[in-house]
Length: 382
Image (cartoon, rainbow, N blue to C red):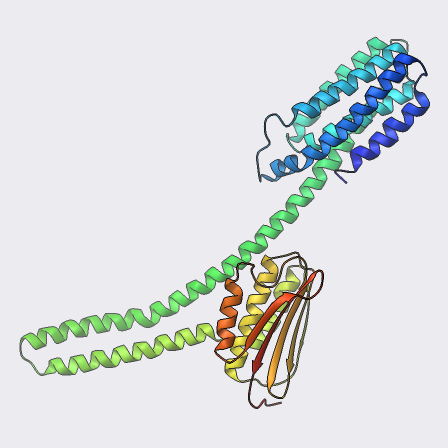
């Protein structure tokens, strides 16, 4: 609508009124043709300015200083042509009123994104006074027409302000929501890393302190030729082996994931993000290694559906056969369920390879992406 509304106003408020309200004399016809060209050029300039103005409003990129020169010059030219037509009596009063609104909106709509609202209204008020005064001098016998121009100008200012500012504010809210979703995903990863670090610290911190103290004691006893040094080193060896076992348990707990919990979590997270998620899973008890590998596929896929693409629907299906289990994650939108850099796919393939599984990923059709994990297995308990 930002790109279309200036053209709609130019056709309905400028072109059509000029056809019926322009005097058929050489000079008014020439000025009217120039006014139509200026209006079309304004629409083109407004289309080119809309994206940079929106980026400046959202804080993505500053607007170049000269970006407003051409639109401002075209607005001044169009208003000057309207005043000239009014002074020559070459146009009907109602046509002049509509023309003023038509040439104001293409400039005012993107300009409303670049300055504070109070500044915009003050400058619009000053322009209204100047234009009303100029038209009053050009046609002093048409007070009602000049007043109508002022009202039309005020109406055009409000249209430009509402169309530009309100739409940009809505877009900024959506953009901030998208950024918040990305930050939430990053925080979840950071929280998991902190949990893993705390677990390792709890396991190793105490044991390493004991190992350090007992090693120092064993050194002192060995220097004195005491046989207790051997007992202390045996104790150090035992604590080291115990620490190794506990670290393995921590890493195993970090790597293992519950498939049922991940399926429910994926549906909840995607649903909270406005993505409709349908989950269909067979009732079967899978071996723990298979569950863990497939749970990681679900976790990675759900996380990256949030990060990549513009998905609105996501389907997760877990189908169990006699000798294999297949997990399929399919979503619409431009992006796939894993990052384009390939690190997500590589990590999932490593986990699936540990249980003899395979992973395929690619477009399912024009706007859908499908990820499928297939894992062979022995007996499945129904």
